[in-house]
Length: 124
Image (cartoon, rainbow, N blue to C red; front, top):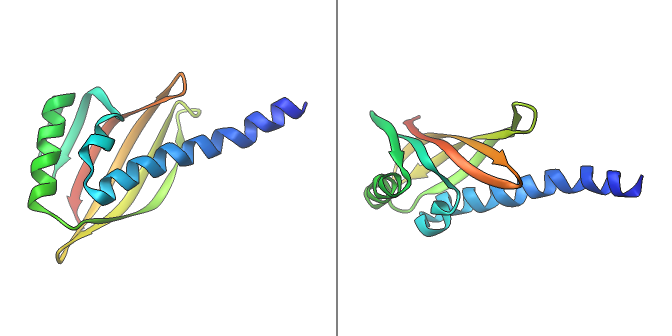
Protein backbone atom coordinates (compact mmCIF):
# COMPACT_ATOMS: atom_id res chain seq x y z
CA UNK A 1 0.00 0.00 0.00
CA UNK A 2 2.88 2.36 0.79
CA UNK A 3 4.27 1.84 -2.73
CA UNK A 4 0.97 2.78 -4.34
CA UNK A 5 0.72 5.96 -2.27
CA UNK A 6 4.31 6.85 -3.15
CA UNK A 7 3.52 6.40 -6.86
CA UNK A 8 0.52 8.75 -6.63
CA UNK A 9 2.63 11.35 -4.85
CA UNK A 10 5.52 11.03 -7.33
CA UNK A 11 3.59 11.41 -10.61
CA UNK A 12 2.51 15.06 -10.02
CA UNK A 13 6.07 15.85 -8.90
CA UNK A 14 7.51 14.45 -12.16
CA UNK A 15 4.98 16.46 -14.16
CA UNK A 16 6.07 19.60 -12.34
CA UNK A 17 9.78 18.90 -12.91
CA UNK A 18 9.36 18.40 -16.65
CA UNK A 19 6.96 21.31 -17.01
CA UNK A 20 9.28 23.48 -14.94
CA UNK A 21 12.18 22.54 -17.24
CA UNK A 22 10.12 23.42 -20.32
CA UNK A 23 8.82 26.72 -18.94
CA UNK A 24 12.31 27.62 -17.74
CA UNK A 25 13.69 26.96 -21.24
CA UNK A 26 11.05 29.27 -22.75
CA UNK A 27 11.68 31.88 -20.07
CA UNK A 28 15.40 31.87 -20.86
CA UNK A 29 15.06 31.39 -24.61
CA UNK A 30 17.18 28.24 -24.14
CA UNK A 31 16.52 26.28 -27.31
CA UNK A 32 18.99 23.55 -26.43
CA UNK A 33 17.00 22.74 -23.29
CA UNK A 34 13.67 23.09 -25.12
CA UNK A 35 14.79 20.94 -28.06
CA UNK A 36 15.10 17.81 -25.91
CA UNK A 37 11.35 18.01 -25.25
CA UNK A 38 10.23 18.57 -28.85
CA UNK A 39 8.60 15.62 -30.57
CA UNK A 40 9.98 14.44 -33.94
CA UNK A 41 7.19 16.46 -35.59
CA UNK A 42 5.77 19.45 -33.78
CA UNK A 43 3.12 22.03 -34.62
CA UNK A 44 4.62 25.47 -34.12
CA UNK A 45 2.53 28.61 -34.51
CA UNK A 46 4.34 31.92 -34.21
CA UNK A 47 1.85 34.77 -34.36
CA UNK A 48 0.30 34.57 -37.85
CA UNK A 49 2.54 31.79 -39.18
CA UNK A 50 2.27 28.13 -38.28
CA UNK A 51 2.75 24.65 -39.58
CA UNK A 52 3.88 21.17 -38.58
CA UNK A 53 7.67 20.96 -38.69
CA UNK A 54 10.26 18.28 -38.14
CA UNK A 55 12.22 18.92 -34.96
CA UNK A 56 15.17 20.81 -36.51
CA UNK A 57 12.89 23.09 -38.57
CA UNK A 58 10.88 23.81 -35.41
CA UNK A 59 14.09 24.70 -33.56
CA UNK A 60 15.09 27.08 -36.38
CA UNK A 61 11.66 28.78 -36.31
CA UNK A 62 11.81 29.15 -32.53
CA UNK A 63 15.39 30.42 -32.67
CA UNK A 64 14.33 33.14 -35.10
CA UNK A 65 11.32 34.05 -32.94
CA UNK A 66 13.36 34.29 -29.73
CA UNK A 67 16.07 36.37 -31.45
CA UNK A 68 13.38 38.82 -32.63
CA UNK A 69 11.75 38.88 -29.17
CA UNK A 70 14.64 38.87 -26.66
CA UNK A 71 14.37 39.23 -22.91
CA UNK A 72 11.25 37.12 -22.53
CA UNK A 73 9.64 36.29 -19.22
CA UNK A 74 7.20 33.39 -19.19
CA UNK A 75 4.65 32.71 -16.48
CA UNK A 76 2.37 29.63 -16.59
CA UNK A 77 -1.27 30.47 -15.84
CA UNK A 78 -3.10 27.16 -16.38
CA UNK A 79 -1.67 23.65 -16.48
CA UNK A 80 -2.85 20.13 -16.02
CA UNK A 81 -3.42 16.70 -17.46
CA UNK A 82 -5.77 15.84 -20.28
CA UNK A 83 -6.60 12.58 -22.02
CA UNK A 84 -6.38 10.48 -18.87
CA UNK A 85 -2.85 11.63 -18.00
CA UNK A 86 -1.50 10.65 -21.42
CA UNK A 87 -0.90 14.31 -22.15
CA UNK A 88 -0.63 17.61 -20.40
CA UNK A 89 -1.18 21.20 -21.31
CA UNK A 90 0.17 24.53 -20.20
CA UNK A 91 -1.13 27.99 -21.03
CA UNK A 92 0.87 30.99 -19.96
CA UNK A 93 1.82 34.59 -20.55
CA UNK A 94 5.10 35.69 -22.09
CA UNK A 95 6.28 39.28 -22.01
CA UNK A 96 9.05 40.70 -24.16
CA UNK A 97 10.15 44.31 -24.55
CA UNK A 98 6.68 45.83 -24.40
CA UNK A 99 4.86 42.99 -26.19
CA UNK A 100 2.67 40.36 -24.57
CA UNK A 101 1.97 36.88 -25.89
CA UNK A 102 -0.21 33.99 -24.87
CA UNK A 103 1.64 30.67 -25.06
CA UNK A 104 -0.12 27.32 -25.49
CA UNK A 105 1.65 23.98 -25.12
CA UNK A 106 0.36 20.48 -25.63
CA UNK A 107 2.69 17.77 -24.36
CA UNK A 108 2.34 14.02 -24.95
CA UNK A 109 3.43 11.78 -22.08
CA UNK A 110 4.61 8.38 -23.21
CA UNK A 111 6.50 5.83 -21.10
CA UNK A 112 7.68 8.52 -18.71
CA UNK A 113 8.96 10.80 -21.50
CA UNK A 114 7.52 14.19 -22.38
CA UNK A 115 7.15 15.35 -25.99
CA UNK A 116 5.94 18.81 -26.98
CA UNK A 117 3.56 18.26 -29.88
CA UNK A 118 2.17 21.77 -30.14
CA UNK A 119 3.64 25.14 -29.23
CA UNK A 120 1.79 28.38 -30.04
CA UNK A 121 2.67 32.01 -29.46
CA UNK A 122 -0.22 34.43 -30.03
CA UNK A 123 -0.46 38.17 -29.44
CA UNK A 124 -2.22 38.85 -26.17
